Structure formats: C-alpha cells, structure tokens
Image (cartoon, rainbow, N blue to C red; front, side, top):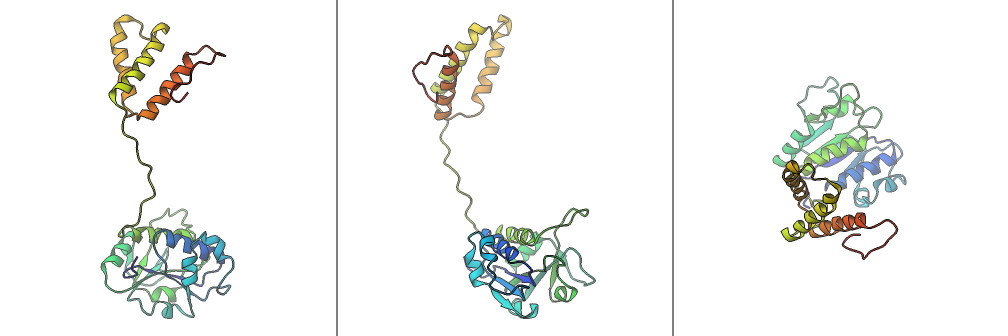
Length: 248
C-alpha cells in the first residue's frame, strides 16, 4: 500500500509501552504503518510494546522518536489534533469521518496527533494543528483510551482504501426442490399420526403454513440431510438403533 495519503500517527508523550503497542496494533489493522512519537515517558524501544502489539511488529520497528511535536510533523502540511475540547484554541473542529475524507482529498502528508493517556494534548500541542478532531461521544462518559482513539481515526480513513474483507466461507447452493419435498413429506408423515393436522377443516391451511415455514430458510442439501437425520432419530424407538441417515 502506497504511503501517498496514508496519515502519520503521532503519539505525544505516551506513558505506557502497552498503550504504544495497542496503538500500533490498531494502526496495522487498518493499513497504517507510520508511527511517530514525541518523548515517550519510558524511552524507546520499550519492551512492553511488543507483546501488546500482537504481531504489529512492522509498525514498532519503523517507529520514529522526536524531541518535539513540531519536529514530528515538520513534513506534514495537514495536522489534526485529537482532543475532547478545544482548550481555548480557535481551530476548525471536525469528526474523524470528515478528517479522513479531507486526508484522502488533500495533497501532501497528513498527521493525526494523540496526547498522553492521562491528560491529552496541551494547548501548545493543539496550537500546532490546522484542525481539531473530536469524536461525538456520550457527554456523561467521555473516556476513550489511546488505542480506541487511534482505531476510530484509522477505521474512518480505511473506508477510502481497498482493504481485504475478512474471509467469508463459500455458501452452498440451495437444495433442489426434490430434496425439500422429501423433507416436508417426512415432517408430515411424522405429524399425521399425532393429529397435528386436526381438525380436518384446517388441515390444508396448516400444511401450507408448515410448507412456507420450511421453505423460507433456503436450506442447502447438507442442511436438508441434517434435518432428515434429526427426524429419523425422533422416529426411532428409544434404545433401538436404526440405520444412520443424513446428519443423524
């Protein structure tokens, strides 16, 4: 994937190696690999980051450390500061979705900046940004952790790129009508001696309802065989084993 409009993720004064690793994991899930940090509290590299990254080693290996936020975003004409409030700085305020659309649209590199886990970005950090990203969130409980904030922004950005979808199992084709008719007849044969279609005046309507219910799911041939096996098992006298059939 080209780094043309892939945003840089910048963590300002991150405190815990585990959180750096989780942020890296969030990034790589959505195709982002460029991580920059400003004076991580416990230095870098941090042995706690690797296990928390859960395999996102590429992001950690490429991570760069800077002495100031200005240096970290020096090559980025578009800088977004993530913060819950504007902290007295007058800047455009956008959602992660709007920021992602702008990143794809605008020429030049973009950086999304995240503050320390406990306090968030300082006013001086926000002042360096061109715009502020604020997540619409429950006003009574605004408590996103660092990795959650990163994954929200990374996910919105990923909507504009062709990422592979999770593997989907091939669906089996619907069973042929003959197999469905056999299953329906099997049901009716079991229900008839138990007076399920009583009274006779309602028998036709009851059969139609049963048929409608059994044909709705779009059974494939394995599902039909399994259901026939269930019915065969119910037909058997308890304690007496008959021939195996279908899924029984």
